[in-house]
Length: 299
Image 1: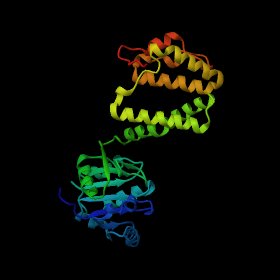
Image 2: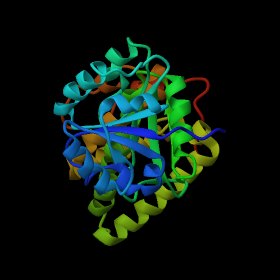
Image 3: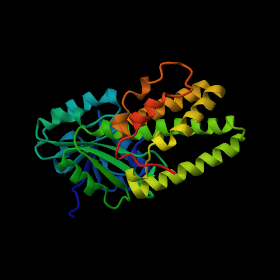
Image 4: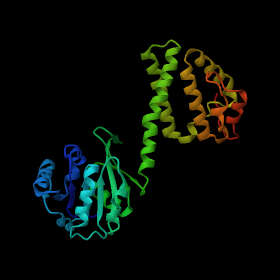
């Protein structure tokens, strides 16, 4: 694959948090660095130890222009780019940002630019032992960014335009919901008499085994926690939890209902099957709602 021409950078804000500093190899091809003033551009180039201070018009020599700016400074940067003499038709622009998607670059798209937004992982966050970059936007821009990251040991994940929030929603499920379920499981073992250390070790092993099983088998690794064969045990579990920790019982009951609704649609309505606040148990008829013809059983 051909190498890029010098990569341009339009910057504002703090450079100390820049992904270009966390992964220095990304700055290897840096050429013109522009900012609101040449003095500020020179400071950015010196901080990166790459590139040189330049006027925006020098971006006409670049295949790829990076934008790094806090959200508040982004409109001014886009106005400066649009008012320059650079022809944007067919040129790739990549916004380096942890929250915004490429839609904020639509005004440059209207001038013919290929736009994308790239998020680089924070320090220590890796995929397969490599720094992770998530890029969302136009395929043509993603191809140029992929070329730019060659040799930097970055693992790049590419998303279609507008899919960034779908991606981050998946990360939120894993990072926010899983710890809640794990903590609830630890609390349940603690009510049974295990020490905090014992409970954490047991649940950590189960969580590790479950994650490995899902990694190797995918959805085939799941099972219905409220299948017909398991219902008497589940009813007893919820009753015991309700007597000891009603809030924990309600959490488990609602979590099971949510899982049933998502994975086994016949389970819809389970969350309202028990209208009491005790969280003790669900009616037996609610268990039958969970059981469909393709629900795997457990031993």
